[in-house]
Length: 130
Image 1 (spheres, helix red, strand yellow):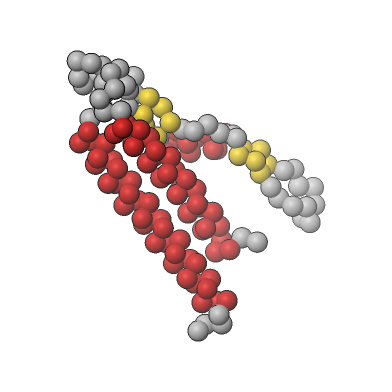
Image 2 (cartoon, rainbow, N blue to C red):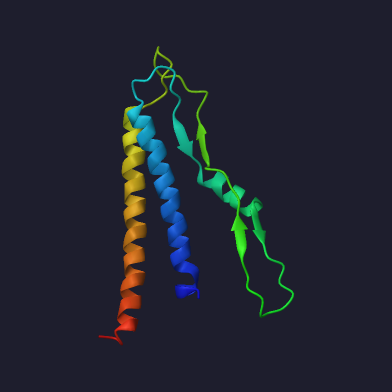
C-alpha cells in the first residue's frame, strides 16, 4: 500500500540524503586539525545519477504480479583532493562547514515537519476526523 502517493517514501529518501550529508560534514569538522585530511562532500546529483542507473525492477507479465525493485548504489560521498588551504595539507574550512551544517539542518527539519504533517493527516483519518 502506497500511502499519500509515495510522498512518505520520497521524504524518507530525502532524510537519508540529509543524514549522509550531515555525517560527512561532521567528519570534516571533527578532522579540522588532522594533517592532510581532505574534506568529504555528498553530491545529490551523483546519488541521483547512481539511483537511475543502479536499480533492478521485476519483469511483470501479469497485472496481478507484485512490482518490486532493488536499489544498488554507493554511498555518494567523495573527497575533495584538489583543495589545500593550510600548510599541513588540511583542506577543512571551518566557516564553510558550519554554514553547510546549518543549511543541512534546516533542510532536515523541513523534511521532518512535512513528514509529521503527513502522519498527522493519517492520524486524523484513522480517528474519523476528530
